[in-house]
Image (cartoon, rainbow, N blue to C red):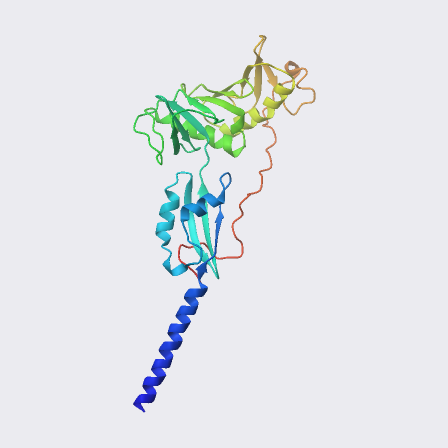
Length: 293
């Protein structure tokens, strides 16, 4: 009887060991799927993760994978999950370069929150707005936020950069001047000076700029001042002189006779936001850093 019991236990252990081996062989990562990249190639994140092909899910250290990816200032891991039978899904927040700061010969590349992405020796081919007038303190380094001796300068910077990105208008601007918080101004790539006033109501101010700048370009104006300081209307002072002219982008013929239009207190219609290019999975539970069968 005892021998029979031992035999049953032995067979049970063989079955358990065989099942564990089969499970381990099946749960191997053969594909890394990256979600959240808008500009950079998702393959960059996969390379940072350093997951070997056919690597067992039980050997992957999720904290270590997260650390490797987060070491690149352009990425922040949101979640890592195993998707049966052979996928590892990594969701990231991609930081995007929004502006540069020229400080003591160094070119500091930041996102819209002031997070430092790179410190370069020269501008090279970067086509980002240059921040001027910022009273930057020393001690900046990649992976940290810029600091200023005048805190409200940073509030103004974040408000401007956030709206430029949200309204896809970053490429319109060549310079953002923060010297006077109550009299902020920008320069467009097309050569216009944009008077913003303070940093309140920045959403409507950027919307007005986007609405009127193409009109002025299409009418051939060379330089001048666009004023959107109230956030309720826009006016234009040509470089060749004359009085400031109110601009209503909704009025017919505004480009040909800008001075004949009365200002309006209604902002231009909002653009329809573009759909998210990186949709979250809809057929799976909330992401987790733990492997799931």
